[in-house]
Image (cartoon, rainbow, N blue to C red; front, side, top):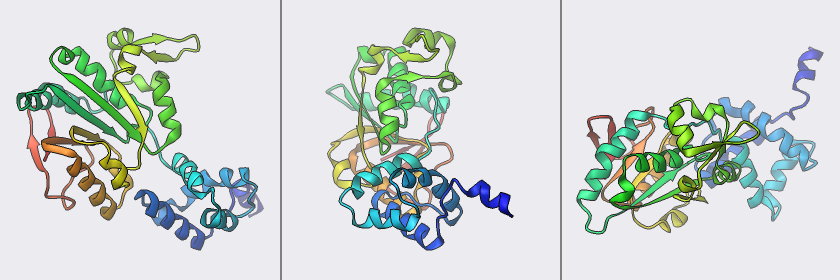
Length: 283
């Protein structure tokens, strides 16, 4: 029994009542929902943070989150710690092919001013928006139109990594050596740095998808990529986020979700389009 206690010793105990209060606060601020089974995950990820601030219990840490003027900044730290950011370049290639070969031509066919605005929502460390920039370049679309790619995440740590544009081998599991050699340079430490040409095609900003007022500042968009992000939300939050996307998209604009995600029972505002390469949602 003592060995069991010892193994848990480096993590402070997160009592059920404090877990429920903490979960409620995270939910209120971000729309992210942690089920009862996530209690240990929160305990594990937030214990070191609470200790860093010299709290010896989660009760005291939560009290700080309730009453201290620095609580807003601390919740930003919490979002950084509790969001998982597993991604890589050219993920879900069939969908990317549909985007390049079918979605973009359709959008441009309806425009007199050839400018396309794309939002990568929940972009993590930047692999998705950079993939879009490289694919548009490869397909020659930059010769025919102007593209604005805005990428956002709630997690500040991954955003600074995205802006830096430096990646390890595991980010390239779906990238051909030819593309990697064309758009990246090998650094002395073995990492790969994205070219300035690609990096300058993407702008990054911190954004909470749940924050309707801030999202509305993005103006009108032609395409929203939000892949493998809404899995963190419960149905009520998903509806808010999807409505935010709907309100930002121009008429007939496109919403591209991850393959495991669907709008069934969430929204009737989009129609599911069966394209040659993949299925996408259209306003």
